Length: 319
Image 1 (cartoon, rainbow, N blue to C red):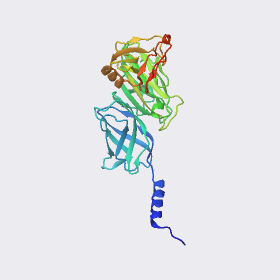
Image 2 (cartoon, helix red, strand yellow; image 1 turned 90 degrees about the vertical axis):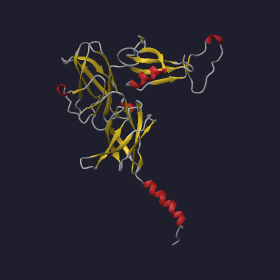
Image 3 (spheres, helix red, strand yellow; image 1 turned 180 degrees about the vertical axis):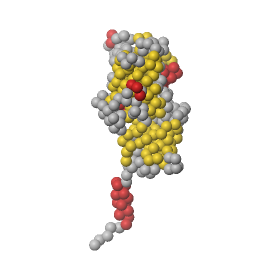
Image 4 (tube, one colour; image 1 turned 135 degrees about the vertical axis):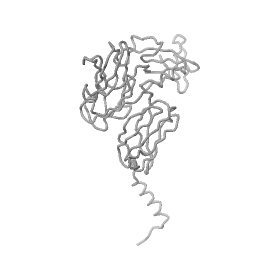
Protein backbone atom coordinates (compact mmCIF):
# COMPACT_ATOMS: atom_id res chain seq x y z
CA UNK A 1 0.00 0.00 0.00
CA UNK A 2 1.34 3.39 -0.94
CA UNK A 3 1.38 5.97 1.88
CA UNK A 4 0.83 9.67 1.28
CA UNK A 5 3.53 12.02 2.55
CA UNK A 6 2.86 13.72 5.88
CA UNK A 7 3.03 17.21 4.35
CA UNK A 8 0.03 16.29 2.17
CA UNK A 9 -2.01 14.67 4.94
CA UNK A 10 -1.62 17.48 7.49
CA UNK A 11 -3.47 20.22 5.51
CA UNK A 12 -6.14 17.70 4.51
CA UNK A 13 -6.76 16.72 8.14
CA UNK A 14 -6.86 20.38 9.18
CA UNK A 15 -9.44 21.12 6.48
CA UNK A 16 -11.58 18.17 7.56
CA UNK A 17 -11.51 19.38 11.16
CA UNK A 18 -12.45 22.91 10.07
CA UNK A 19 -15.40 21.60 8.09
CA UNK A 20 -16.67 19.72 11.16
CA UNK A 21 -15.96 22.52 13.63
CA UNK A 22 -19.15 23.83 15.33
CA UNK A 23 -20.41 27.30 14.54
CA UNK A 24 -22.35 29.18 17.24
CA UNK A 25 -25.90 29.91 16.07
CA UNK A 26 -28.40 32.24 17.76
CA UNK A 27 -32.06 31.64 16.94
CA UNK A 28 -33.53 34.18 19.38
CA UNK A 29 -32.58 36.68 22.07
CA UNK A 30 -34.44 38.24 24.97
CA UNK A 31 -34.83 41.10 25.54
CA UNK A 32 -34.62 42.69 22.11
CA UNK A 33 -33.03 45.85 23.45
CA UNK A 34 -31.89 47.97 26.36
CA UNK A 35 -31.45 51.47 27.75
CA UNK A 36 -28.17 53.43 27.88
CA UNK A 37 -26.60 53.44 31.34
CA UNK A 38 -28.39 50.26 32.41
CA UNK A 39 -27.45 46.60 32.92
CA UNK A 40 -29.50 43.71 31.56
CA UNK A 41 -29.40 39.93 31.35
CA UNK A 42 -29.43 38.75 27.74
CA UNK A 43 -30.85 35.24 27.29
CA UNK A 44 -30.04 33.42 24.07
CA UNK A 45 -31.51 30.40 22.32
CA UNK A 46 -29.55 28.47 19.72
CA UNK A 47 -26.81 25.89 19.29
CA UNK A 48 -23.09 25.58 20.16
CA UNK A 49 -23.20 28.62 22.46
CA UNK A 50 -20.53 27.20 24.77
CA UNK A 51 -18.27 29.47 26.81
CA UNK A 52 -19.99 32.78 26.09
CA UNK A 53 -17.75 35.65 27.14
CA UNK A 54 -18.39 38.69 24.97
CA UNK A 55 -20.49 40.52 22.38
CA UNK A 56 -19.82 42.41 19.18
CA UNK A 57 -22.05 45.28 17.97
CA UNK A 58 -22.26 46.50 14.40
CA UNK A 59 -22.17 49.36 13.59
CA UNK A 60 -20.03 50.77 16.39
CA UNK A 61 -22.38 51.93 19.20
CA UNK A 62 -20.00 54.72 20.20
CA UNK A 63 -18.82 53.12 23.46
CA UNK A 64 -17.63 49.62 24.42
CA UNK A 65 -20.34 47.33 25.79
CA UNK A 66 -19.14 45.12 28.65
CA UNK A 67 -20.43 41.54 28.59
CA UNK A 68 -19.75 38.74 31.03
CA UNK A 69 -21.40 35.41 31.89
CA UNK A 70 -24.32 35.69 34.30
CA UNK A 71 -23.59 33.77 37.51
CA UNK A 72 -26.05 31.87 39.69
CA UNK A 73 -26.18 31.86 43.52
CA UNK A 74 -23.28 29.36 43.60
CA UNK A 75 -21.11 31.47 41.33
CA UNK A 76 -21.57 29.18 38.32
CA UNK A 77 -22.33 30.51 34.83
CA UNK A 78 -26.00 30.41 33.82
CA UNK A 79 -26.36 28.63 30.49
CA UNK A 80 -26.75 30.86 27.42
CA UNK A 81 -27.03 34.06 29.44
CA UNK A 82 -24.82 37.14 29.40
CA UNK A 83 -24.95 40.25 31.58
CA UNK A 84 -24.56 43.37 29.43
CA UNK A 85 -23.59 46.78 30.78
CA UNK A 86 -24.67 49.49 28.32
CA UNK A 87 -22.65 52.71 28.84
CA UNK A 88 -24.59 55.94 29.31
CA UNK A 89 -22.93 57.40 26.21
CA UNK A 90 -23.91 54.53 23.90
CA UNK A 91 -25.83 55.68 20.81
CA UNK A 92 -29.49 54.87 20.28
CA UNK A 93 -30.35 52.77 17.25
CA UNK A 94 -30.68 49.28 15.77
CA UNK A 95 -27.58 47.07 15.90
CA UNK A 96 -26.45 43.64 14.79
CA UNK A 97 -25.43 41.79 17.94
CA UNK A 98 -23.13 38.75 17.81
CA UNK A 99 -21.83 36.73 20.75
CA UNK A 100 -18.29 35.44 21.24
CA UNK A 101 -17.79 31.96 22.66
CA UNK A 102 -15.56 28.90 22.56
CA UNK A 103 -16.43 28.27 18.91
CA UNK A 104 -15.94 31.83 17.71
CA UNK A 105 -18.35 34.52 16.53
CA UNK A 106 -22.05 33.78 16.10
CA UNK A 107 -24.57 34.89 13.51
CA UNK A 108 -26.18 38.32 14.15
CA UNK A 109 -29.48 39.17 15.84
CA UNK A 110 -31.01 42.65 15.94
CA UNK A 111 -30.74 44.55 19.23
CA UNK A 112 -32.19 48.03 19.82
CA UNK A 113 -30.82 50.68 22.15
CA UNK A 114 -33.22 53.50 23.04
CA UNK A 115 -33.66 56.12 25.75
CA UNK A 116 -36.96 54.81 27.14
CA UNK A 117 -37.06 52.90 30.46
CA UNK A 118 -37.66 49.18 29.99
CA UNK A 119 -40.64 47.10 31.20
CA UNK A 120 -40.52 43.31 30.77
CA UNK A 121 -43.88 41.61 30.32
CA UNK A 122 -44.12 38.57 32.64
CA UNK A 123 -46.80 36.92 30.51
CA UNK A 124 -49.18 36.78 33.47
CA UNK A 125 -50.55 40.18 32.44
CA UNK A 126 -53.08 38.43 30.19
CA UNK A 127 -56.18 40.26 31.45
CA UNK A 128 -57.06 43.92 32.05
CA UNK A 129 -57.11 43.25 35.80
CA UNK A 130 -53.50 41.99 35.74
CA UNK A 131 -52.13 44.65 33.37
CA UNK A 132 -48.47 45.55 33.89
CA UNK A 133 -48.18 49.16 35.12
CA UNK A 134 -45.89 51.33 33.02
CA UNK A 135 -45.52 54.98 32.02
CA UNK A 136 -46.53 56.25 28.55
CA UNK A 137 -42.78 56.57 27.80
CA UNK A 138 -41.60 52.97 28.01
CA UNK A 139 -39.99 50.23 25.93
CA UNK A 140 -42.21 47.21 26.64
CA UNK A 141 -40.57 43.82 26.04
CA UNK A 142 -42.31 40.50 25.81
CA UNK A 143 -42.53 37.02 24.29
CA UNK A 144 -45.86 35.38 23.53
CA UNK A 145 -45.62 31.98 25.23
CA UNK A 146 -49.37 31.48 24.82
CA UNK A 147 -52.08 32.88 22.55
CA UNK A 148 -53.31 35.18 25.34
CA UNK A 149 -52.72 38.92 24.83
CA UNK A 150 -50.43 41.03 27.01
CA UNK A 151 -51.95 44.02 28.84
CA UNK A 152 -50.22 47.22 29.96
CA UNK A 153 -51.62 50.09 32.04
CA UNK A 154 -50.57 53.74 32.28
CA UNK A 155 -51.98 57.05 33.45
CA UNK A 156 -52.52 59.73 30.82
CA UNK A 157 -53.75 63.29 30.47
CA UNK A 158 -56.45 64.81 28.29
CA UNK A 159 -55.04 65.93 24.95
CA UNK A 160 -51.80 63.99 25.44
CA UNK A 161 -50.45 62.42 22.26
CA UNK A 162 -49.24 58.84 22.68
CA UNK A 163 -47.40 56.89 20.00
CA UNK A 164 -46.26 53.27 19.96
CA UNK A 165 -44.05 51.56 17.40
CA UNK A 166 -42.63 48.09 16.70
CA UNK A 167 -41.50 46.59 13.39
CA UNK A 168 -41.14 42.83 13.65
CA UNK A 169 -39.39 42.56 10.28
CA UNK A 170 -36.63 44.91 11.46
CA UNK A 171 -35.93 42.57 14.40
CA UNK A 172 -36.11 39.39 12.28
CA UNK A 173 -38.95 37.97 14.39
CA UNK A 174 -42.30 36.64 13.21
CA UNK A 175 -44.42 38.95 15.35
CA UNK A 176 -46.93 41.25 13.66
CA UNK A 177 -48.08 43.26 16.64
CA UNK A 178 -51.70 44.36 16.84
CA UNK A 179 -53.97 45.47 19.65
CA UNK A 180 -56.08 48.26 21.08
CA UNK A 181 -56.04 51.08 23.63
CA UNK A 182 -58.88 51.29 26.17
CA UNK A 183 -59.95 53.88 28.74
CA UNK A 184 -60.78 53.07 32.37
CA UNK A 185 -64.33 52.02 31.45
CA UNK A 186 -63.04 49.51 28.89
CA UNK A 187 -64.08 51.56 25.86
CA UNK A 188 -61.70 51.30 22.92
CA UNK A 189 -60.11 54.66 22.07
CA UNK A 190 -57.49 53.68 19.46
CA UNK A 191 -56.05 50.68 17.66
CA UNK A 192 -52.55 49.31 17.28
CA UNK A 193 -52.20 48.10 13.68
CA UNK A 194 -49.13 46.24 12.47
CA UNK A 195 -46.97 47.67 15.23
CA UNK A 196 -48.14 51.30 15.02
CA UNK A 197 -50.41 53.33 17.29
CA UNK A 198 -51.09 57.07 17.24
CA UNK A 199 -53.61 58.33 19.79
CA UNK A 200 -54.72 61.57 21.38
CA UNK A 201 -56.07 60.79 24.84
CA UNK A 202 -59.63 62.09 25.34
CA UNK A 203 -59.49 62.54 29.13
CA UNK A 204 -57.37 62.29 32.26
CA UNK A 205 -57.22 58.82 33.74
CA UNK A 206 -56.05 55.24 33.43
CA UNK A 207 -55.56 53.62 30.01
CA UNK A 208 -54.91 49.97 29.19
CA UNK A 209 -53.10 48.75 26.09
CA UNK A 210 -53.73 45.22 24.80
CA UNK A 211 -51.18 43.68 22.41
CA UNK A 212 -51.07 40.35 20.58
CA UNK A 213 -49.63 38.78 17.45
CA UNK A 214 -51.88 39.13 14.41
CA UNK A 215 -52.29 35.35 14.11
CA UNK A 216 -51.84 34.74 17.86
CA UNK A 217 -48.54 32.97 17.23
CA UNK A 218 -46.53 31.67 20.18
CA UNK A 219 -42.92 30.75 20.90
CA UNK A 220 -39.48 32.37 20.98
CA UNK A 221 -39.95 33.71 17.43
CA UNK A 222 -42.91 35.81 18.61
CA UNK A 223 -41.10 38.43 20.67
CA UNK A 224 -41.62 42.19 20.62
CA UNK A 225 -40.14 45.48 21.82
CA UNK A 226 -42.92 48.06 21.65
CA UNK A 227 -41.75 51.61 22.34
CA UNK A 228 -44.39 53.94 23.75
CA UNK A 229 -43.64 57.64 23.74
CA UNK A 230 -45.28 61.01 24.29
CA UNK A 231 -42.30 62.69 22.65
CA UNK A 232 -41.33 63.40 19.04
CA UNK A 233 -41.42 60.65 16.42
CA UNK A 234 -39.18 61.16 13.38
CA UNK A 235 -40.07 59.40 10.13
CA UNK A 236 -37.49 60.88 7.73
CA UNK A 237 -34.57 63.31 7.64
CA UNK A 238 -33.48 65.36 4.63
CA UNK A 239 -30.16 67.21 4.34
CA UNK A 240 -28.83 69.03 1.28
CA UNK A 241 -25.07 69.47 0.66
CA UNK A 242 -23.76 72.73 2.12
CA UNK A 243 -26.94 73.36 4.09
CA UNK A 244 -26.57 73.59 7.87
CA UNK A 245 -30.27 72.89 8.46
CA UNK A 246 -32.21 69.63 8.26
CA UNK A 247 -35.78 68.94 7.23
CA UNK A 248 -37.53 66.39 9.42
CA UNK A 249 -40.86 64.71 8.81
CA UNK A 250 -42.71 62.93 11.59
CA UNK A 251 -45.21 63.48 14.36
CA UNK A 252 -45.28 65.54 17.54
CA UNK A 253 -42.29 67.58 16.37
CA UNK A 254 -41.99 70.82 18.40
CA UNK A 255 -42.52 73.90 16.21
CA UNK A 256 -43.51 71.90 13.13
CA UNK A 257 -46.20 72.50 10.52
CA UNK A 258 -48.81 69.85 9.68
CA UNK A 259 -49.01 68.57 6.10
CA UNK A 260 -52.68 67.50 5.77
CA UNK A 261 -52.20 65.77 2.41
CA UNK A 262 -49.12 63.74 3.42
CA UNK A 263 -49.97 60.53 5.29
CA UNK A 264 -47.73 57.45 5.46
CA UNK A 265 -49.27 55.52 8.39
CA UNK A 266 -52.76 55.15 9.89
CA UNK A 267 -53.60 58.15 12.04
CA UNK A 268 -52.54 61.80 11.79
CA UNK A 269 -50.72 63.21 8.73
CA UNK A 270 -47.02 63.97 8.75
CA UNK A 271 -45.54 67.15 10.18
CA UNK A 272 -42.57 69.08 8.73
CA UNK A 273 -39.84 70.74 10.78
CA UNK A 274 -36.83 72.72 9.58
CA UNK A 275 -34.19 72.78 12.29
CA UNK A 276 -30.43 72.84 12.90
CA UNK A 277 -28.32 69.69 12.78
CA UNK A 278 -27.78 69.48 16.55
CA UNK A 279 -31.50 69.58 17.35
CA UNK A 280 -32.28 67.20 14.49
CA UNK A 281 -29.81 64.61 15.81
CA UNK A 282 -31.32 64.93 19.29
CA UNK A 283 -34.85 64.36 17.96
CA UNK A 284 -33.72 61.41 15.83
CA UNK A 285 -31.94 59.79 18.79
CA UNK A 286 -35.11 59.89 20.91
CA UNK A 287 -37.43 58.62 18.16
CA UNK A 288 -38.81 55.05 18.41
CA UNK A 289 -38.80 54.55 14.63
CA UNK A 290 -35.85 53.76 12.34
CA UNK A 291 -35.42 57.00 10.40
CA UNK A 292 -35.23 57.23 6.60
CA UNK A 293 -32.26 59.45 5.70
CA UNK A 294 -32.27 61.34 2.40
CA UNK A 295 -28.85 62.99 2.52
CA UNK A 296 -27.48 64.59 -0.61
CA UNK A 297 -30.87 65.14 -2.28
CA UNK A 298 -31.28 68.24 -4.42
CA UNK A 299 -34.00 69.76 -6.54
CA UNK A 300 -33.70 69.04 -10.29
CA UNK A 301 -32.71 71.80 -12.66
CA UNK A 302 -35.56 73.66 -14.32
CA UNK A 303 -36.89 71.81 -17.34
CA UNK A 304 -37.31 75.16 -19.10
CA UNK A 305 -33.61 75.50 -19.93
CA UNK A 306 -33.56 72.14 -21.71
CA UNK A 307 -30.15 71.28 -20.25
CA UNK A 308 -29.40 68.03 -18.40
CA UNK A 309 -28.68 68.47 -14.69
CA UNK A 310 -25.32 67.35 -13.32
CA UNK A 311 -25.45 64.30 -11.05
CA UNK A 312 -22.77 63.34 -8.53
CA UNK A 313 -22.05 59.85 -7.24
CA UNK A 314 -24.03 59.22 -4.04
CA UNK A 315 -26.56 61.94 -4.81
CA UNK A 316 -30.33 61.49 -5.09
CA UNK A 317 -32.47 63.53 -7.47
CA UNK A 318 -36.05 64.48 -6.66
CA UNK A 319 -38.68 65.69 -9.05
